[in-house]
Image 1 (cartoon, rainbow, N blue to C red):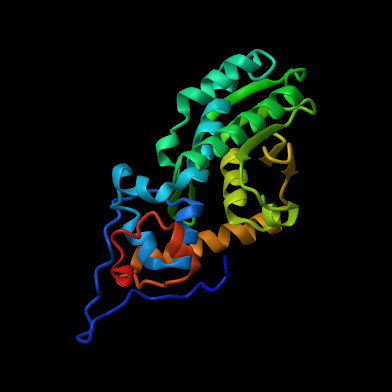
Image 2: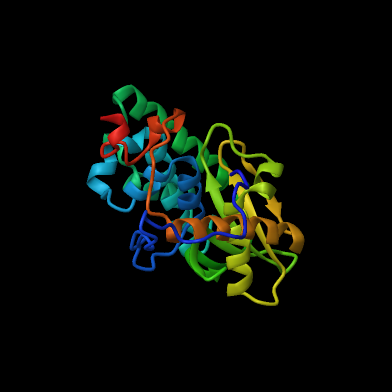
Length: 268
């Protein structure tokens, strides 16, 4: 996300000097994803607030359906204590409960993605089943106020690691997961780290991106100066959004996967 905002700004005014009222977002908390949507395309950010689940299903696609099913299966697993307490067959049953093949483009994609989901979960279980962990939370919604704005981040699972630290994990199923540098520089990971730190003050906090395709991850702790820089990027963007009265559409490659494309005037 480009750091293209500055500290000083004024509310927009019309030709008569009257302040133009911004969009009423009813105090909804920002997410890092929403902020990045706004940077990519303000229209996408705006329309995402009005797109329901039924409408967005057409643009979710098979890979996103795969991720959701795998992620939900692991969340269910950790609610029962983790792979050390849940057998592999039980984990696969959880995956089947969450799998929605109707979101795939055709039967071939459905079969391929289902097979990939089984492989990822099988590999994860075989690696983690001997590891005893303390599950602190699963599917944890973390709300925090930053720069006068409410933000929210979600951890797939929060574990107490052997070193005593509190580690918030997110599972990824993408073919090209972010590298360690991408995680360190990603404002979404910084937001999660800050939210976890505020939820568990005084703890040794870290965040981990775990790639289920590669069966490995990057565990990150932030220096304060680096964290401040990432949070500043998010809050400055939040400042702009709260006073914005125009949300232009910026077309590009991201339009192909936009969940709000059915409503976008630029794509009609």
